[in-house]
Length: 119
Image (cartoon, rainbow, N blue to C red; front, side):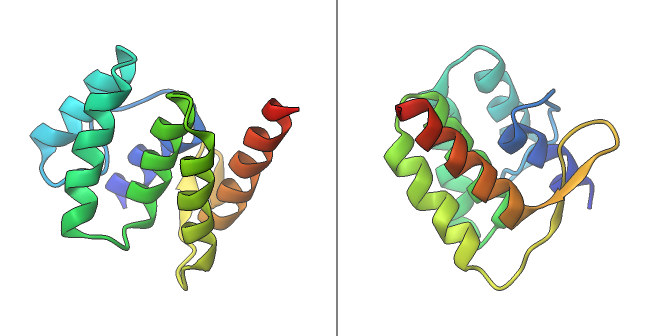
């Protein structure tokens, strides 16, 4: 549960934690550091490595879509958010200190933010 709660913070665009969705705690720390520094390519690489081991990781997908969105690749981000919408699972993810949202609701909101930014 800790992994889902903390790593979903990236997808929501809120405060970050070193305990991100990644294959190892060290990789999670590296993703966190890369996002904090705006090193989107490094964060993407690490998240893709994690997803190669667990391709249906909803939180990892949300995090990757967030990274892509912030690196100016909205169309790719939308594609991943849409994959989240197609999944059978819909975990609750933290979007702040005490707020939670279902993964699919968050994915829909992020898609909306991409489309509204393109107008």
